[in-house]
Image 1 (cartoon, rainbow, N blue to C red):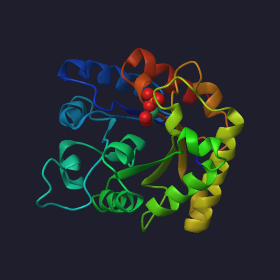
Image 2: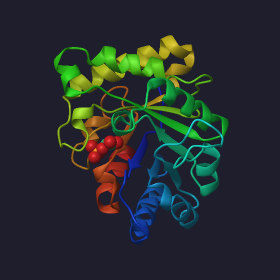
Image 3: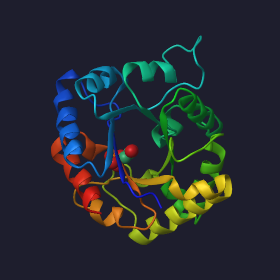
Amino acid sequence: MPNRKYIVGNWKMNGLQSELSDISGIAAIAAANPSVDAAICPPLTLIASASSQNPAFAVGAQDCHYNEKGAHTGCVSAAMIKEAGASLSILGHSERRADQHETDAEVKTKAEAVHAAGLGAIICVGETEEERDAGKAVDVVCGQLEGSFPAGADANWLTIAYEPVWAIGTGRVPEASDVEEMHAAIRSALGRLMGDGADAVRILYGGSMNGGNAAELLAVPNVDGGLVGGASLTAAKFGPIIEAAAAA
Ligand code: PGA
């Protein structure tokens, strides 16, 4: 079992230079809780400033292209986000799977590109409410995991985030028993995909995690951390989640 919790903030399309002080505040709380791995993934425009102002703190991207360079207007490569100061990237977030029509195959190649550049990858999977109501949640999530699973996967650089789409930004959180069932299913799927190394891969829960529910969610078996959106935007909200992970 992974023994260090991993708490990652996903700022999505939020944050201007004037909000960089929040990242510094979060970095200070992370430094005070060295038993936890913490990171913030701000918009691309803040990566360079956030990482240069907080050199000991992990800053990540929210996406990157699978090619090294070329004619892909508006996209950035793994080498580019790395040069800006990122040490990881979120990949295949459900908002990108929905809004940018990202496929499992693209997420897989993006993860391989990120790894080739020496960065960490967090691959997101999660079912819609309709899929859960139809009893298909585990099949959908394990299918996404298999389809998005990169070559050369290793716990040193790969993390999985289970994020039920209906729990993102809604304030709704699944029952602990449902989170436990899904994380166990993901752990088993990882075992089929990569053998013994599966036990060390961290599986994060994401979707309306906050300072009030983090301790309960982080106590669920196979929940090795959290991917946090809204509650990662300020040090006041994100700090208690890092502290809950330190106490877990
Ligand atoms: P949320 O977002 O914490 O605002 O629900 C989580 C995510 O989408 O990563």
